[in-house]
Length: 194
Image (cartoon, rainbow, N blue to C red; front, side, top):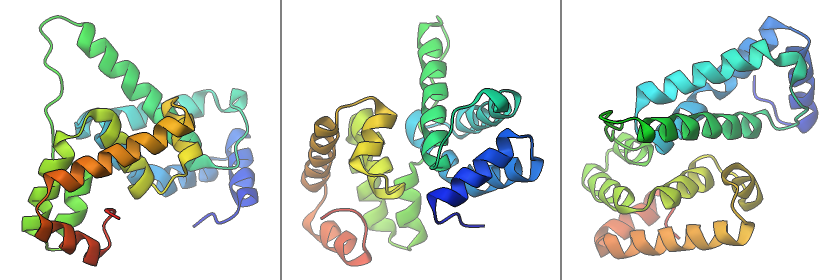
């Protein structure tokens, strides 16, 4: 079920908070793939992202009566997932002799590969992987999750102006990293480069 209005989301959230298991399952089903792709874009490790999603939903269920209100469930979940993964990465970095997760193929590269544009896909992937983590994150939130600059600022704890600047800098970096031919193919197939 696609929740089109804030009222639909508010009603579903209220039902979940009252212990409705079907509402809980619907929230999980409606948001799992977005959360998975976002989690991978942050930590570059599918297993870690899935573990964080399951932790998030376990915590939600066990604390459901104490949760705040929301009329945008996806936004609420993205913010919670980011917090969990950030904490986990911070703990990993503090532990001696524990390797950080290996980088997997980015979500952005998978979208382009699905569109059978392998050469452009590899070039875009290479450009995205060269971006700093913060730029990769805002590109994902802006163009794949289609969040507003205000929502991205809230999730990332950045100022709105900083989000604008980070998106602009990321797009400029991608433009410089990619060949002219690849830029045109991306424009034609509707990927995010303006």
